[in-house]
Length: 484
Ligand code: MCA
Ligand code: AMP
Image 1 (cartoon, helix red, strand yellow):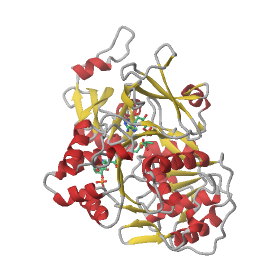
Image 2 (spheres, rainbow, N blue to C red):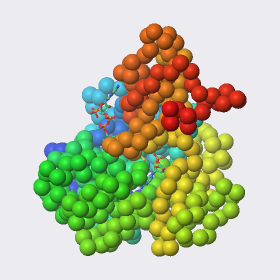
Image 3 (tube, rainbow, N blue to C red):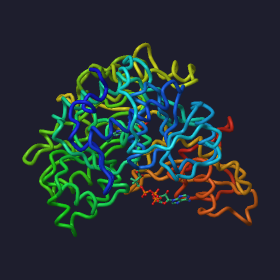
Image 4 (cartoon, rainbow, N blue to C red):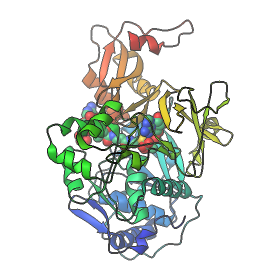
């Protein structure tokens, strides 16, 4: 299973990573990363200012080579959330591209400018498999985001399971435009190709033209969230070159949220092939995937399902009473619980939350599903209604409510998610204004939340109410809001 990134030393002349005109071969990446590794070796933890750039890749690979846990930061994080992540993860250094301006919350840290052309390092010794590789922050139902500590073995295990399931090889060239501070874009989208010895081309930002260009110029795989596939599906009718590009890809893979059946069918109707759906979580990395064979032209894609558990993943469904559901009937709904080498080790500084997340050795995903006779898992909902998936980002209603309550024009607030064709779900704020004559506008509240937390957590709709519906205990009745 180890080393984690064997290709760095094995295929020096191949292209490893490309961002627009800038690229690095494996040899160049190894030299740059080892030069940086020599400078950060011994640091307790390093933060990486994770812009979509070569510098982020060099920074993360350097940390992995040095055995220093890296904390990838969303460069758009607002001040409150950033302060929390920095205080919680306590990095001693921050790695950033030269010339990038860093917010005040990071200015106390030693800053190291990452250069993709550094030299003078030595190949560090391999690091034990159970040591932490990354700390990735993820939202929960309440409170600020928690740092999921991901060990090296989990990364290796998940990438090797995907290699098996997808026939992923060094000849694959992956194109994507995902952010590099989450599991999908960073672990699958960057470390995946790097572990295999293949190439990753990052588009910088997502658009159909970039996808068409790269798939037409030799890329073999596309990774995206359902919002991206929705946007591609919207473009298909008017864009024959996109149809051809998607039809010619070896694999189209969607994950991070459910791919709507309608979009999946539109893509199949236009291109003759299906999308491989895979299911995972920050804490567990990848859990299930549908089969590439079913998605091939002439195959039978199964829209609405996420396939079967990946090699090495133990998966069970548990009913409300805590009993295991053994039926493969496509009807009995239970919570997905999992175990395997792909799991995180803990939430940083949160033994309480870590303990609550497990039932013995089984991790409780909070996702509710059925299993068909063919073993295919169909996710039907989530245990917690206070978690919202928007654009593939997981967002806790509670963190947005807390941010809204800090706005002087907001007296009371509740947040819900409602269906959105493009984003899957959109964030809706229900606000009781401090002054009913001057209720806060959507733009003002959106800027407020984006500035404190992150732009993707901003509300897209605001409703002003005279009072929030509450039960006898004073608890907000969110179901009444949704139907109101
Ligand atoms: C708008 N913007 C603002 C504001 N309003 N900025 C500050 N304040 C405001 N009030 C900016 C946004 O930052 C953005 O900037 C632009 O306006 C448009 O934003 P938005 O409409 O929100 O998004 P989008 O650009 O349309 O993006 C859709 C997207 C994105 C590309 C699909 O949602 C995305 O990248 N999603 C990926 C999420 C992901 O990777 N999830 C994985 C986690 P600008 O235009 O400059 O960018 S889940 C995971 O890892 C698990 C393991 C799994 O299973 O995968
Ligand atoms: P995150 O914590 O951001 O890593 O998001 C993990 C959650 O995303 C899971 O618990 C699921 O609810 C959801 N998710 C990921 N992939 C899929 C998928 N293919 N279908 C449905 N939901 C998904």
